[in-house]
Length: 289
Length: 313
Image 1 (cartoon, rainbow over the protein chains, first blue to last red):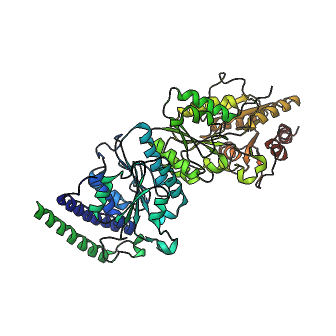
Image 2: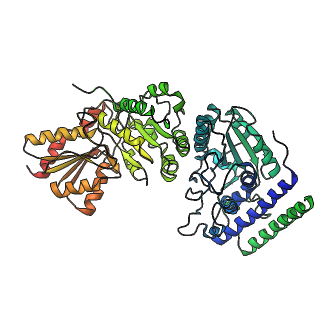
Image 3: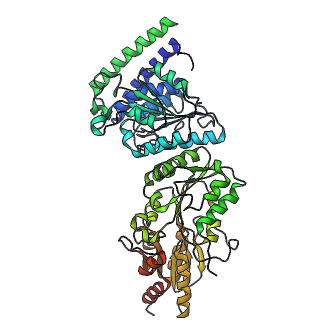
């Protein structure tokens, strides 16, 4: 296991996450469509992966040894678009075309965009694809890892469990499943819609090494990702307990914000809240330095 | 002498041969290595064979991931399950994402005969050909299966292939007397009065019908439309112009299959009478495939009857 993230880096990642949240809210506001709640809940996970954990090269998106990321919960693509743009996979200007006629920045990951591996959007597909990629790495003796982000509502799809079985069967310790466990789906609480708990025990029973953490705590996320594989010969499942709508007080834990679009007033309020967070992290960064 | 080698065995033998040179070829099975005749491949190349268990959605998703990583996966799974249970993975993970996955539907059509509608795949062509970017191929006999398999290994992109369970009578004398090109129909008989268009196991039936029609002085053209998508529209329109009448014959529902594909072209570009012969819109009757074919008139005698009726002689 690697050491704890040094505080300057953690703070920089937190600053980045706040900025991405502001970018995605602006983008959704401009487009008048988007999956606001889920993108806010997964922002910290994606920030940890893209700015610290994954081996990637924006200038060479198809680099053979890159780590792979599959957004199985494809609908929460807004945070991903903002991060890929920020990293230079495509021009940031293009975010203005999100969901507009003829755009490639559609409401789900689209592999016509550099940095996107596969088209997703239909739930329950990503983990099987990730199993195939991780299996190929093992067959070819390559060192890349495959990160697959799933939703918790998505866990009701039977195909998730077909892939879970295969991941353990083929001992894919280069495969990391992440569940954005915000406990909400479009119709309400995941436990009311179709009970999932004890979800961690289910994954453990399927042969995965399960890590439970606060999925909005970047430090915890980085630490867990960098420790993989913890158990040799076992895939890892990160149960990331998150808050849907995280970072925007009036959207947090409100099911309607699954795909609610902020109005003028809400956008101003949300951006004010997030810029306060951002500035506080920036001050901390300054102090640490 | 009757052929005793099923197409699935030829597929396995051809992949074994090609795998000597091509290390990227992989075969996947859903507890179907026996029915797919892939056990020899699993034994010869255990590292290139992936068993996923009875999980058809998973087999397609995993194959898409393998293909994305440079492998050439051949998914071998019963056509009835592969074309229905995993159709969303086929649509999204293969066709939409553009992965190089070869989907081999085994024991297709009414091969499973008496096992009933759950095991028949007579809607698979309709579903597969509606998906953009997915090619659809039905080889006619063992020789064509060999040629097709070679072509598949060199073809980049998703393909749905359907082959039957039992040995079929030869259409070709050998595998070295013609060229197999994906998307190019083969004119097996150059008739002038009527054209019979067939695919897969019905090509042999069409040839027998041609011989029967010749006996009564009717000259039938026979097209082997092994690729239903992309469709050889030029061959169809030439047949429409030159023979004026078309009969299609398929081991598939009369809705959405070969007949429908042919009719879509003819009706828009050169309208001539078309008769579509296949399985009617009902759960197909149980029995051996030959009995099911006979029951629904997928036979040389019935094609002859239809042709004479269309020609009025």
